[in-house]
Image (tube, rainbow, N blue to C red; front, side, top):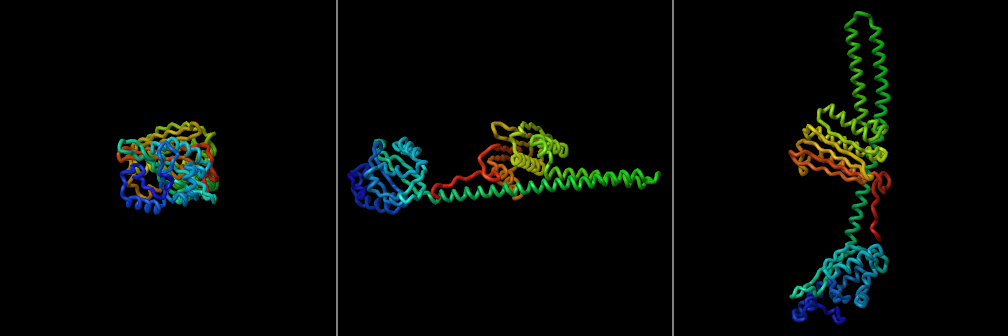
Length: 385
């Protein structure tokens, strides 16, 4: 370069005899001055810089002359949180031409920019690496957009958690009122009917039959009330814990539907708080409901356990399966709801189904994590944003 980086052609730098036409150099200079990316070239195994495009001054906010005098000056602007990683990666990968890193740059005015810096090798006719060229792109706007998207998703999950929490509180209140108020009234009515039946005139079979019919009707209504109350919010979930409630629910489902349920629940309820217990129970409930409605399954396998501060649950059926690319809107809302319940508490839910091969649901959920209000995971800010 001989210190004259203004008159530079990358082809000539590799082979001085291969670029006799000055048009090539002029075209390169026009392109290099026009592009927004920083184009650079150096000698492998050496600190010598052959060329850096003018975009460096805009992205780094520092002069090219300073960089040519000290080829490592660009590292001085790298964010302290990224510096060690980038220095190590540059030293290890630059000569191979496979350097590809994202990092932050602090400009003299304290503005922080995100940069994606890539390097590739240029080979001579003998296949030897004769030059290392690179492109550094300002990706700050993409990082800010990514940050906004993460924050939006975090807010959405927080909203879902809040809505789920409000819904559970409403269900709990309604279930309690149905059980306590309506249930007690029906029991009192039933007792009165028994009293009335035993005080009917003897020998009047028509009145006795009618009274017994009313008693049977009241008993049926009581059972319906209990069923509705349990479906709204089973009290045993709060009183006994998740494991007994899951076993009870699956036993109830098997008795009602005739679908064979192979169940193994090894959950330590002391590790599972109310929010996690509710989320897991609702996911189980939604999954079993979908199986009953759509799968035509004759057998279901449910496995759940707590291990190493994680709760896992697997649900399999031998039903008709489904085409994941052809799900109607109502079905997709159910799947989305289950995933959101899991994601809002830092978990992951996988649902795999193939037509004719049944469906598999696998839930993984951490039982203790760093979360902000209502469990939504905090999203780190982009430095300088």
